[in-house]
Amino acid sequence: MGAPNFQTSIEILKPDLYYSVQKLSKYFCKCMKKGILQKEIAEDEFRKILEKCLMIVEKDTTPLEAELRATNNPAEIVGVFDKIVIKN
Image (cartoon, rainbow, N blue to C red):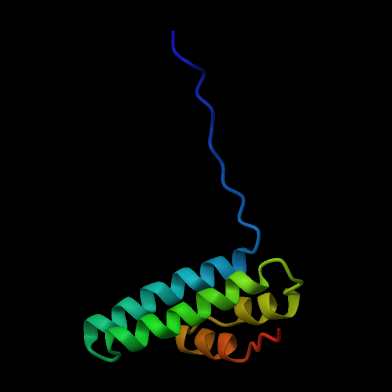
């Protein structure tokens, strides 16, 4: 007899942010493979988006999440994240 099997589960706090970032990761990888973006530029853009996500994850992001939910095109998702301004 072994230890009981427990189902592991993961709770995603902001699913719209999470899935948008996943979609952008694939998008930037494809752009680099096709030669549309240079590696440094793609990394810099993706890093900026990740930093913004980490800063706003604790905040109320309901309007942002609604906009991300309505947007399906990765280029438009980048535009949504470009609109975010972090004030210190």
